[in-house]
Length: 91
Image (cartoon, rainbow, N blue to C red):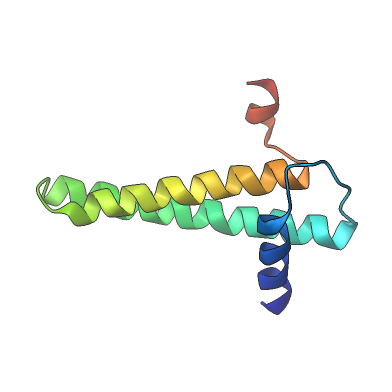
């Protein structure tokens, strides 16, 4: 967990300039991106359920925003680390 937290701090504080990551750093960035996508999926599922249950409750919209934030972070981590998913490369 400490390595993951350290990787997060490094990845999120670096500029957009291109750089090479060693294998361990690339794996840590990949793991971090995966964790963000997992959290995004969970947040968006909860949002969908809450919004369907009560459209007037703002909690569902907050979960939806949180899911979007996790997706944005995953893409940012991927850009910084120099990797993207197949659909992003061709899109």
